[in-house]
Image (cartoon, one colour):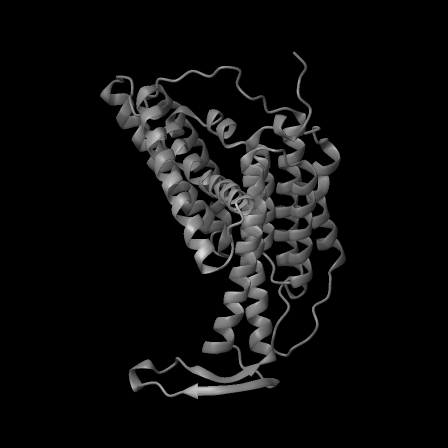
Length: 358
C-alpha cells in the first residue's frame, strides 16, 4: 500500500500544536498589522492543505464568527463607550440618562477615535484566536487525534472530539439543506429560510447524538479494567500534584518574583502529570490499530508554530511598544521587521507538505 504524503498523513497533534503556537503569538500582541499577518498565514496554509473532509470546511465558519466578534466589539465600544479617554471626537450619539445605581455605564455620548482604535485592536486579537482554532479544526482529523490520546484521557478525549466536530457537521448540514432548498426553488435566506433550515439541522443533530450514544454503548465506552486501590491512589496523587505544579510553575514564570522556582516547578509538574496519565491508562481497555507515527514532518510543523510563539513572546518582552501600540495618543501602528519575519515562520507547513489531489 502506498504511503500517503498529503496533509492528512501528518499527525493531527502537530496541526494543533502549530495552530496553538500561532494563537499564543496572537495573545502577545495587539498590533493590527501583525495580527492581520497571522490571520493571512493561517488562511494560506488552510487554503493549500485542507482536504475534502467535512471538518475542513469549518475554517470559513470560524472566520465569519471572528468577523462577527470584531463587529460586536466595535458596536459595544460605540454604544456603551470606551474606558480609554480620547480627544478626537468622531461623532456624538444621543445619550440616554441612567439611574444613579448605574454609575460608570453610559448609553450613547461621544465616540472617539482613540476608543474605537482600542476596541479594534482588542477585537482583532480575539478574532485571530478564533481563526487559529478554526485552522486546527480544518486541518486535523478529529478521529485520528482521538486515537493518539493517552488511555487515561480517552473518555475525556471522546467528549472533546465530539464537541470539536459539532461545528464542521453543522456547517455541512447547513450547506446540504440550503442546496436542497435552492434546487426545489425555495428561499434559503432571510428569517423564513433560516427557520426552515434551522429546524432540520437541529433534528439531524439530535439523530446523530442518539446514533453516537448507541455506537459508543455497543463499543463498551465507559468500561474500565480492575486495578489495585494503591495504583488508583498513586495515579490521583501524581495527576493532581502534577497539575498543581504546572499551575504554580506557570504563575512563577509569569511573575517577576517567581523566575527562580517557576521553571523547575513547571518541569516537575509536567513529569508528575505524565506519570499519572501513564498509570491511569491501565484502567482503559483499548488497543490501537496502526497508531499514527510522529515523524519528521510532524516535528517540523509543530516546531514552526512553537517557534512563532516563542519569538513573539520574546519580542513582547524586548520591544513591547512595537507589539502593543497605544491608542492614546493615537498614532498609526508600524510593522516591526523581525517579529513579522517570526510570524512568517508559520508558513513552514506550506513548503513541508504537499496537498493530495481530491
